[in-house]
Image 1 (tube, rainbow, N blue to C red):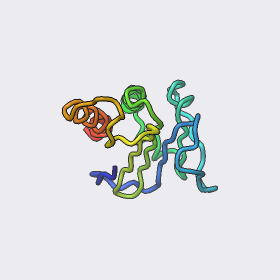
Image 2 (cartoon, helix red, strand yellow; image 1 turned 180 degrees about the horizontal axis):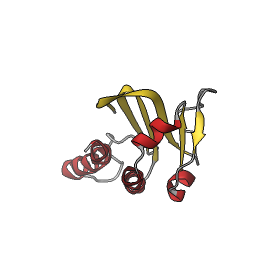
Image 3 (cartoon, rainbow, N blue to C red; image 1 turned 120 degrees about the vertical axis):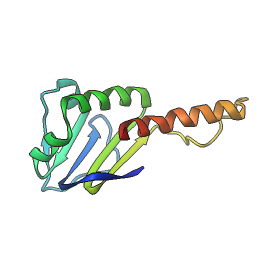
Image 4 (tube, rainbow, N blue to C red; image 1 turned 30 degrees about the horizontal axis):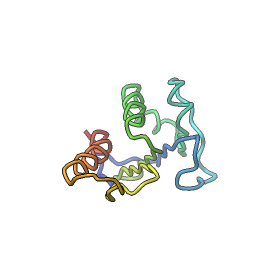
Length: 125
């Protein structure tokens, strides 16, 4: 999902889970930033050319929020703040818009899709 931010970020900030390599490597000019939130720093790698920008975006409240939503998503989370855009990707390893082989009715499928999309839209709010 791509979102237009209300601010322009002077330096890009990328956040990805440490445990799995979602969306490949990173540029050599970027550094790995550690936060005071131990759980967040264990779970996520923060890459940026300017740590100040990362700390501006990643307030203590926002880091806790990302952690709680990541648990709910049950997948790999990737976020990138570039220019006036925020990119959010969640890899659950399955096609969110495909019904399972079992007997899932249309309303149950609709609710599952809404729940998965709500994860990303909650971050926007």
